[in-house]
Amino acid sequence: MASDPYAGMAWMHMQMVVGLRRLGHDVYYFETTSSWPYDPIQQARVCCSEYAVSYLARVAEKFGLADRWAYRRSYGDKAWFGLDRSRAEELLAHADVVLNVAGATRLAEEELKVGRLVYYGTDPVCQEIAVANADRRARRVRDIWREHRLARLSRATFPSLTGQDASASAGRFMGQWCALESSVYHRVQLAAGRA
Image (cartoon, rainbow, N blue to C red; front, side, top):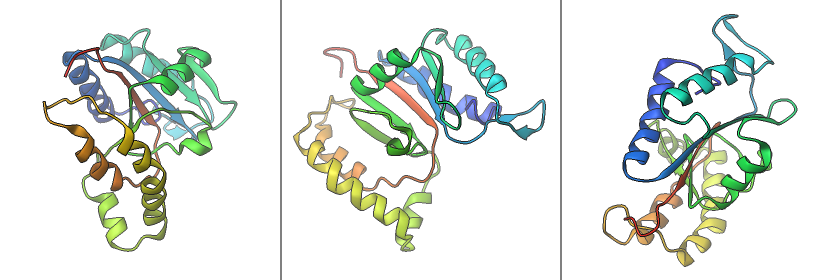
């Protein structure tokens, strides 16, 4: 959102935040980016996060997240803005769920530890088409994901958002995960005893 400061991006990400908060979840917005952000004043991608960070701070404040956002400048010095580094990394590592919107962040490259990661697709069928067309990279990522994550998922218990057992469907959903390139996390702390 901050790396591509267009109204549509803000609308998409903030509607997720608002919806999760209305459901009673404790929500944070995180963005990490290994590519230069777009600066609409300069009309170019720039090696400077000044516009991106100020834009994110304004949008976050308008949606009640003034002290609940973080931006990581991974393309340079890996500095954190908004939440400080230790707090941001602690929240990511211990969140009940981290939504990787569009699957854009490559966690190994970012050197971030995340507990329970859920791919949240925003472009219907893009990843499915890549796998169906034998895209080697998409299939390799999917296979690695299945191999390493489904074992953990089979032992995990998922809080139900629908009143049904979510563990079985989570395994099927996670098995279709394919990372392309991403920069956005939403941190969701599920409220105790809330379905």
